[in-house]
Length: 447
Image 1 (tube, one colour):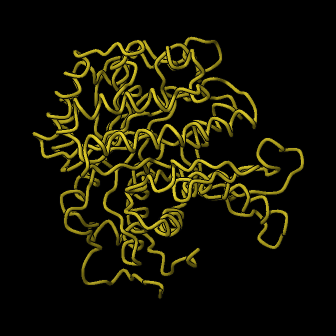
Image 2 (tube, rainbow, N blue to C red):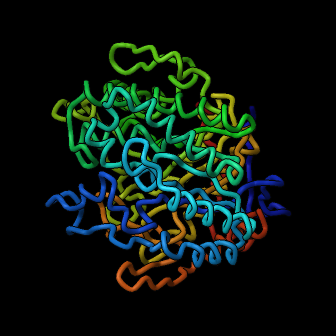
């Protein structure tokens, strides 16, 4: 396929296909508030777990008043929203279902649809009910059956309002941060437990996938993968290339490969045949990249030292390098799996909003390029609508198009919300915004 070139003198702006989904993404624990029956609520109360001792608390108060933010989505011309439902609200103990919580989720999903906003619903976004965590979480042998039971309940109660289901958000992140770095529950465990957790999450996804299709044969079911680029710091160094390549393969693609052929290739191969062919779409969560340099002192990161490109723009809190071309690169590789793609998360922490407008234009230009090069990308969900509780980083990172004070619940739109609203309204990139950017004249080689 020949590279596609764009010039600033192009007569028409980059336009996206009819039916393209434009929205934002959130997760239950980060916006609902008072999710006191899950493992993160308990984790936040352990000293040193969360930056500055922050807690989710009321979060964005969605459990009581999400509809006000739904109105904001509609006013910003969004036609889709990705959200999660909280397992710990719906199944408060084994087999103890909460019909009141189900009714509230029906209200929320109905409210989205009434505003012309199509929901994509995630079943698991980092949190476990306390009773699941007590049995071992990702390592609990009966997790696949319990997760399938939860999926069955969700489909029966909400399926008439949902066409797009995402089973698990970023299983690679949950495993790495939960069992290797210890930043997420359960706080460590080592490589063997990390691999066992990944295998069990594959089985849980597969069980939920089949359960959802039994309940809704026409549903589209996928998961959201965090795809983070790892490039050799010194391309001429064989060792840098080796550790960057191994890290990329293990972190980004081993899980998706297992969902294609039923084999997890992380250390000794593990066959998970029930996982093969259980993707109707891939959700791509893309934020940044690392340069990787071989360093024998960094065994926990596969002997690679990770850092951003010197001099590159960096988002707040050292969260990561701003590298728009990486979105094109991961989309081209995800395209090889032969299923549609949604960009289910893309954004940056930027409290002052000085990087986000350019970030939006540059990343969406790369998405458009990917589409022109044959990638079947059907939607874009920006992370996030409002500032939210950002897990181990607490309230220190501000990802919202709309600023939010967690104490007062005051919302203040950032200037980037106006830009994104115009993009959503047009389903195209505004020419003036493109003209203000340095448009990259060439595309990296297809991987």
